[in-house]
Length: 433
Ligand SMILES: *Cc1c(COP(=O)(O)O)cnc(C)c1O
Image (cartoon, rainbow, N blue to C red; front, side, top):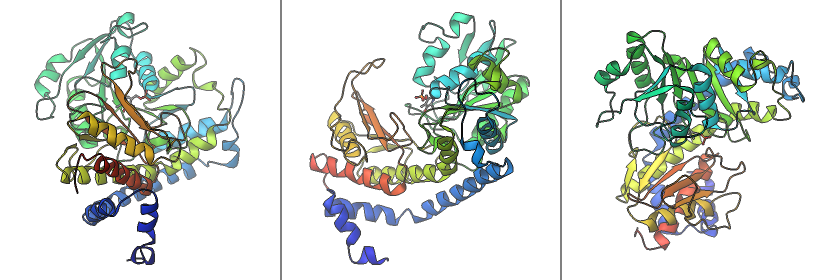
């Protein structure tokens, strides 16, 4: 044990920041059982760190790449090199990585709208996609949706045990099926998150039926959790947000699409204009954040993953429902905890907020958010507004009263946040230690 531990200096500092002895000790006991899993996470992070570094060195990232351009952004060497780095990290032919892609939903909409044509059909073989995509697809009628452009949609749900419904997927594939969208993370659902190898099996099955179909993976929250990505197992496109894992907490905006040259080109012509494609789009002053964020992303993701596992084990031990559970393997950084009462959800989120580096002094309350059918409480004391690679939590105030928790730029901060959440729950008398 270190000097700081034996002389109690760390515990004293925790105490001065509101963590009581019972909460601290409860956490310490849980941690003792996690050393093997944490070592495995560090090993994945080491692999991914080297993968990113190798891609940066191969593409000769240089000081000039960090400068950025203005105006049209012709010959933006930093932007073009960053896209080559992303392509190498994901082992794809090409990539589009831009601050002009405003968020994850935009990146996904761009990938879909640029690769589908009127008369084509889109298939989701893994059930309902992420909420915001319902309007992109037109599942919920919306201006500018794929449905308005004559793109139809089919969905095959997962089987009750979370496995693929191969029989109905086969039936759903027809002459119109042009693109298959596969969401890796469970998002705000209770289904399991898909492993990369599981995604590979699904893609192989689909390509066995229709080889020329485009397989796209919504990779949000999954990047760098494993040593391989969906593009390593047959995905034609992987798509995600830079204010989640691959931005490493430093990217202040942005999205990426990595994949087959033709798919990425289609997306570029849609993002800018036919005829212009990737050639325009000034990077302004943002490239250092993109490069440095990607460089840090493997270890940042590892920290968030440790936090998720720590939280799962704490709340599982206290008898709450946790998805994933304390011991199962991880394929994204999201942790769901079901409290069963509004008070539990509120206390948890208030604890997370109180641990934040920014806005720790404000108290989040449930509010009526546009687009939701119940009040929602959100805890986010982030450097980048809305960033969910930073320590954050939210939960709708409706049964089963679950919170979704993710992020933490460092493991140490994630740990403090979770101890603060537990302290808040103990202080409210919701659990006794
Ligand atoms: C976050 C997320 C999105 C949408 O990203 P935004 O940046 O919030 O628009 C899409 N799919 C999944 C699985 C996500 O987690």
